[in-house]
Length: 485
Image 1 (spheres, rainbow, N blue to C red):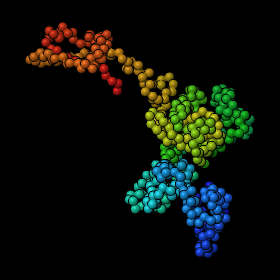
Image 2 (cartoon, helix red, strand yellow; image 1 turned 45 degrees about the horizontal axis):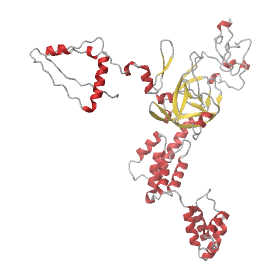
Image 3 (cartoon, helix red, strand yellow; image 1 turned 180 degrees about the horizontal axis):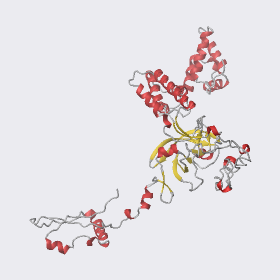
Image 4 (cartoon, rainbow, N blue to C red; image 1 turned 180 degrees about the vertical axis):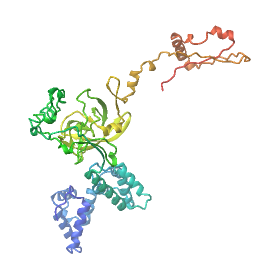
């Protein structure tokens, strides 16, 4: 046997293999001294050093075989308290790119030291259901477990089935498409394929009568940022790849599963497009501040992007969360965007917490918020009469206080345009109510409040005291400090 290595297997596994080898070779009846020598010969130098130190000054060859096994069981056993081991088991969630088989194997490994006893399979079954991050799959598993008689094997079988169907859906791109052809737009695959005698070198379409008729005369190129031509015919465009004419279609797709009803743009290979709709920089970029993993991030709100993206440096600043595989990202003109992967992040917005997916780009571009996040965070962009964009959300209470300072001031307000009339039956007898006694503890505060009201003209809002005396009606009132709600 090879030497024991705690990085590859546990001591319990190694001991089991050693005892099995003794049975295979017919050494069960071997003397205890011989078994000790055989074990010391196989376990390796590291274990021999540990045993030598532990049993010094005795010779380890004289140590009984069972004593060595007992010591190694205690030495290589779990060091953490039982409650800590069980907490690690309960807090273990399935990762984004983790398969069901690997997740179940990890749960069984953690549960092996939790001393669950006969409840082992039941606890692993429950943790498997609670640890799945996909809400749809989790709901299906809960429905299947209508009683405690459902076994761990049945739950694993159903989880594998749900995983396989989800993977097939993602790879096959089963989606509902609403496609319409843009027949009026004709593109060449590259600028070098233009016919100079027949095609316009500035837009790629059939040659115009005059230069002023060209639609690209006042347009800025996305590739070189110069005006007067489209990016599809830009001479500096070497690496970007244009879509063929037959594939240039715009789609509105609805993904199945947890990504339903997300508007984006895809080609026939399931690629996701970013910045699909751009209006030639008529407006300045729109930004919104978002907390991601408790880090404030200024994101560019782009309703033309299907998904949200961040750069590599920001991903490291967020703690480098584990990345999973993702679909291919392409730019507006079809150029590939190098992507490191996809991960789930915790987002805080308007006193609410969200778990949202985000793509990590191999670069340091401005963080981009796409339709997926805009829908989850309920962020909408509207334009006023001057076509100025406005984001409708409230970042904090201070925004409201700054916007409506008069409503939250300490001054006395007035109701204008209304007149109050108190109607009393003519047969009613005037009544004088006794003044309410003021508790000594708040007497100073009441006097200060009355002085403040008198300074602000409160005595002019009511009936003068002289008229009250003549009318014979007196109602005492007590004004005190009110707390804000």
